[in-house]
Length: 317
Ligand code: ADP
Ligand code: MG
Image 1: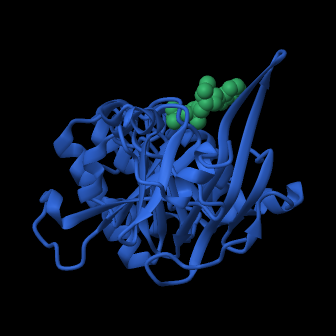
Image 2: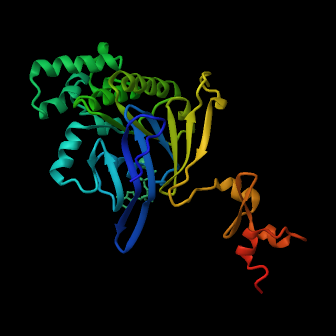
Image 3: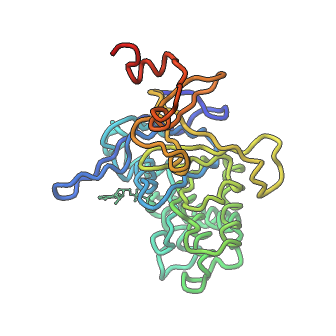
């Protein structure tokens, strides 16, 4: 497994060549096809990608709700591929908290916010006194102390998601996994929710992974990893010194190169340059260049580089 920490710090999540195949009748759907990802402890990061790219599949695996088909997945020192069922139950109960897109999946509708936050603690046998104290602390942390005795229907969508965040913390997890937590709220409310997650991450040294299809999330988190077709493709990090909020120049985008040298070239570049099927790869001035093989054949007097001789068998008949 590749154990190099990203952006310094100890790695908390390490996914190595993760594969997930769903079998539906006689068909196989490859939802993750060799995904590599490292997240350090205490990092607030986002995973973005189009619908169907494998985001929820990844999150379910990270949360111990589903097992990968192949590859490695270590979270908080637990091997989620090999761990026995009993260890997974322990992991889900004490190490990880979930926030879902639909607040209905997070909340019990006939209970108040205060009762909802206490519910997970009931199952963990926390004393009534500690339960109430901690529930109050969490509702304060998400700014809902004055709404704590409201029922679900009396809260706005954004407020319900804030209750959901408080619930996800009830078992004092090390990791929060949020699957499109702002998918059903307006931009302003979304900003507020991201702000709460950032504060919680900083105050509690929580590792937070947010799944989103919103590219603008880059300004809200430390790092964004893009998934395309079940594989990590690019990574955007906040540039040191890039302070202005919302300034795209404060971010830098990188393509991810896996240990075998595979990378994904953005589709728009391929279209722009007419690269399809085969391409020519060269090293020029310390750079690796990729260009259309078709262009190359049309050239009048191409340079006779070793790479071309190799690719087209020039000189060997
Ligand atoms: P995203 O969350 O990025 O929209 P998903 O992880 O939900 O994507 O899905 C990735 C791919 O895996 C899709 O093609 C989806 O149809 C398929 N998939 C997800 N879950 C299942 C399942 N339980 N059974 C069969 N196919 C699934
Ligand atoms: Mg999804």
